[in-house]
Length: 239
Image 1 (tube, helix red, strand yellow):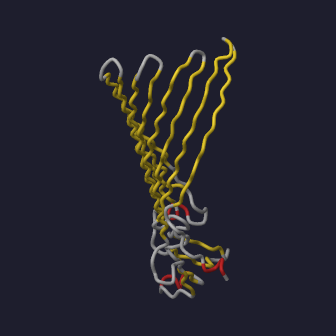
Image 2: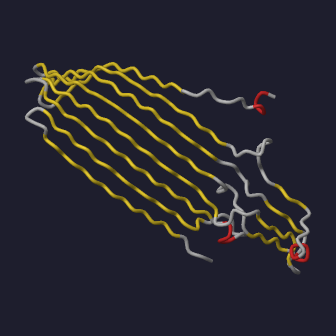
Image 3: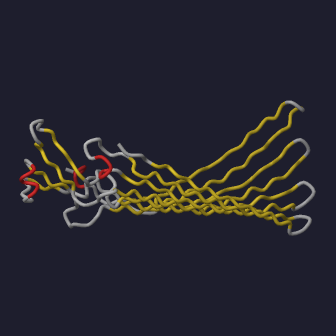
């Protein structure tokens, strides 16, 4: 038996600045770091097969609120966010497996990792939005739009550390494995996916204050999502 750990640090900061009678700027930043250490893999391997999950995220948002007239105001917002999620095994050397141990003929294992071998996920996002508001009596008209660019890097290989199999302890002591296996691509490189996505939208909306207790909202919106990278061929699917 062994203990696992889950630790998190979160920081937040904000600044508000009034530029004049008609403009106000705000900026805020969020930071979060999370670590889950010694996450159990298999009961046969114990701590040598445990993993460390980690996540570090940063989010920065700035907003400009502007009064353009007696009945008109505008809100513009820019956001940048990043996230890094590595996943590492405690022992990334090949796993050692002894098929038969003592009179019980029990299988024992040490080291290696199933899914935490050079595993990482990176995500970056840029977003800009703008909403123009105009008040006409008991109607509030809104027109606006947003655009977001997302970039993703995903590196992952299952059972990439490999494993040696031995029939008994004598074979292990003399390092005489009867089998070795390891997943990898035919060219020896690590599986890596990199792609970007562009999302944008525009809308128009009317909020109608019918009575003091009833508000009706109607509008129209158009959204579009575009993948900026062409996926590679999947040969096994084409067969």
